[in-house]
View 1 (cartoon, rainbow, N blue to C red):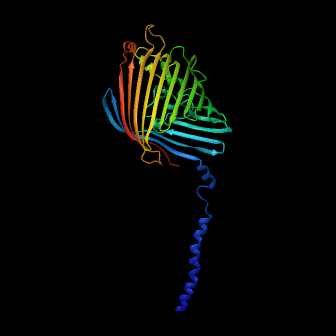
View 2: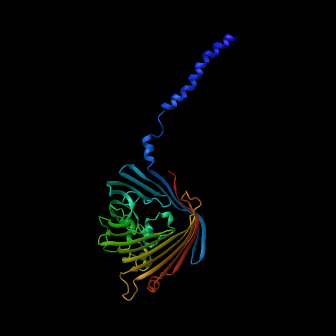
View 3: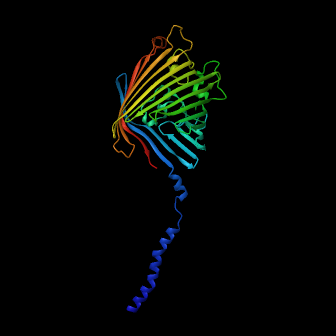
Length: 391
């Protein structure tokens, strides 16, 4: 019996040891799911969920109109290097209705989809859909941080397909950006349709040319983004746009001021056209929009910040009106006080409470001629702002 047991153990022991060794050999020989070359690329890639959501309470002329939870912003973003000299960026907005019927063959829900190539240490070339470098700091700020835009940025097509050449001086304190972009995302027919004035026809080259200077002055205390843009909207209908963006930062205090001016042969923003539509079936011609935007930020303590945004817009119609009238048809005002609380110092996630108050004052001419009526709107919002970096 003992001899039989000895032979049994002698036979099974090598089999048992082989069974233990075999899985280890197979594991070491398997190819990793992600090759090391791919993992190296991921080190230079960021994946971000740009998010703002919360409870919105709306008011018109002081009357409560309703309350509801809303995802105000959700923009998925992925960006980074795929080569030592090649950078990419993609951002899609899921809170905007996708519309593939555009002149650039890409949905208007896509904010950014471009490649940047470093031609030299101080020069880069960019192709694809990018932000138009014609705005001030309001436009350059992450959209989840802006509870409400002023008129010009709110009514413009701010993301366009085209090409850009950027050159930075050796001191890296001044950069110059030159862009050639589409002037709009919609076709001429979709933009104006039957409202196109007589004699105004679509152009074969609906393009814009943009020049921008970004400066860092006084050891970075003052920053600037100044730009001029020329748009070809239609045959014999152009648009000239200028912006002066300024940023002053000292200690816990930051101040922004943007001045924007848009002179339009054919009304692109639509504010004046909407005002006169009951007397004029065509889009307005010869209009001017002037915006002022101020934003202050102050850190009371590392976790608490207070913000205040102030904005004004003056909209003018210089077209066929009574010569004794005031060209200004409407002035709007906005004020947005906000408090932000950051519970985690190592994570950019903020709880916020903000109130968006806007007032629209029409001129006596607009009230008499076009039956315009002054009004005010308000929105009390409580929620979360978070550019969540998940990779």
